[in-house]
Image (cartoon, rainbow, N blue to C red; front, side, top):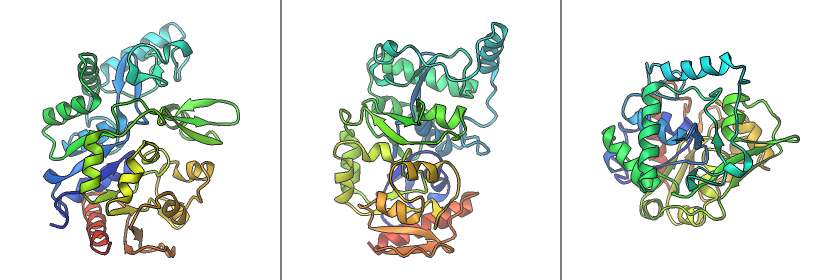
Length: 334
């Protein structure tokens, strides 16, 4: 297997989809997966790490692969009862932010992203919620998010070393002409509809990548799957030292575009709002540290770095293995 020690940068669904077949190409027990935490929220007092949990459930073969969110077959008794209670007293549906002064009090890691569970706007299953209770309890005992994530990974018997990008709070905030909102409101509640003026990674100037993350990146080649460059990978790049560490190692990125057509999600809209062309060429501009790219066979974009082409659409594990093989080949030419 090529490059036994490998780091995968994971956010959204792009890299988790790649990981679903990457074990046929890479030695995953020797791999590190760094998860985006800019999407994290505190919901009803529970700390939720959506991108971390997608990897957690995918590697444990528990993921709901229809939604790429939560645990497959997870009952929703608690969520349904919260919804019933909210409807009974006419609490309006939709995200309910805690008051502004409550956003920066309480659990430090939860700042700028605290929501009430009344009219719960995120669909949370019962087993999924148990993970959030467990995580929150370990955090409140004084463990770091890194320690807590590794404990959960051990409980799920994961075959990778799963790490959060930081133990410090970073919140992805989407700014429109009329208001600002957390990315989860923009994507989960608003379905990505609002026009975006800018994206902020609040807290990133004060946050730092963990020593574990920086050490892995500096010593092992990195693969970035077809994740959203702005909100899935952007929070990582905003951390002090992480982009510099990527410049010190070999990096291969899989484009989530075929020329100017994105496979899924709001990447095009968000890239345009942050000054990048919504295309493969824009992805290359967003990743100046990348040494090579994996592009779709139908993508004729001419880049100034080595390119390996394949069919990059991932709908099952066989597709993921094919794209992972292309990423391994791209590492060989860097």
